[in-house]
Amino acid sequence: MSDAVVQLLFLIIKALLMSLIIVTMVAFIIYFERKFAGFFQSRVGPTYLGPWGSLQSFGDILKLLSKEDLIPEQADRWVFRLAPYLIFVPAFLVMAVLPFGPVGGEPNLFGYRFDYVIANFDSGLVLFLAMGAVAVYGVVLAGWSSNNHFSLLGGLRAGAQMISYELAMGFSLVGVMLMAGSTNLVTIVDYQAGGFWSWLFIPQVVGGLVFFVATLAELNRTPFDLAEAEQELVAGYLTEYSGMRWGLFMFAEYVNLLVVSGIVATLYFGGWRAPLAVLDFIPGPIWLFLKICVLIFIYMWVRWTIFRYRYNQLMSIGWKVLLPLSLANLVVTAVVVNIFGD
Amino acid sequence: MVNSTVDLVIQLALMFAIGAGMAIMFITLSHLLSPKSKNPNKSQPYECGVVPKGDARTPFNVHYYLVAVLFVLFDLEAVFIYPWAVSLRGLGTAALIEMFFFIGVLLVGYLYAWKKGVFDWE
Image 1 (cartoon, chains in turn purple, yellow):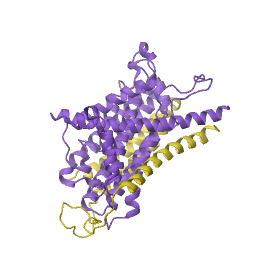
Image 2: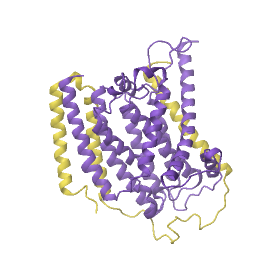
Image 3: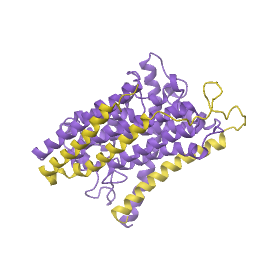
Image 4: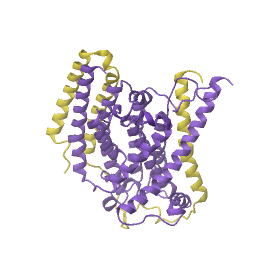
């Protein structure tokens, strides 16, 4: 077979496998989130379905599928239907640029070259930021189209919050771009080769922390979950959604959590690379999986530990603390890179 | 495959198709499985049981517009910075100083907005 056909075949296999893994992982992330929430609050969490309740998410999907899908009378029906897709699809696209193993080099599978990434995209990081921006449309349009006071308020809050933190996010990533000299995630991982002391979280500790906090806001998770503050806004922009359309929002939220954990692991924690040279025998995808699991646990830990901020606190953290910090990080990194070269 | 640009389009389009296909599949499944019963009360907006008063698309706080305008400004700045950041090693000190002027000009605007109280929500 010619190389082009084999590469196309590999691509289809990779894309299907990746989607399957995402769906399975999301189901278990939701289960673990509920289980950990239980443990953090001295409860047991889900217990009935499967061993230790581990099949709870699949049961929930079946339940949501069999629930009535209501669209309010005065809602903007087309926008109302479009909004869930606008949140769901971008999250999926970002997974395409995430490398989960070595890319390029010698043929490694039956005499053909198997790249452990779906798209070796030179602007992968920019694609990630762009897709994050598209998701804001989904949230704002969901709030706007529902024709519900709570939804509108939730959508507006979420929109303002997400664009505010996207700035800090964008600027904190410049530090990584400066050091690795690329926006290609494959190149960024290659730059971090050679053990955990060459991972970027050491020189980029400020940028990394700013990025982490900004992603918390971007994911609409506590302490920044004002958009769906249950006590004041019912469920924010989700109020009018029911059945599987609501399920799609939830699903997208956890796909986003997975993607963002993958991006943090790739940018600051060496991606698929092993922390020590002696551990290189363990394949790359397993390392990436382990790092993503640890990061997801940290996101859950933060969610169930810290209180929700007030809206004015949230905006002043974003604009008055994180943005100047990320700019300072940018300037210092640029000077250091310019003086020391590599 | 063909060349790097076409490859990229194929790769991203495939992921897009799988994502969109999955979402459409879920919605279609629920459309087939879910019960349908019409009721005028069900199609009202949910506002905690109180009958909704007027249209929800009312004027809202002008602060949201200000934040959006500032976002456009700073995000454009970020977009200008990315290519510079990628190629700083090749450009040398002159590019560094030029970028400091660029950031400085925007910092003036940022401080002005801060003094004007755009970031204070009460």
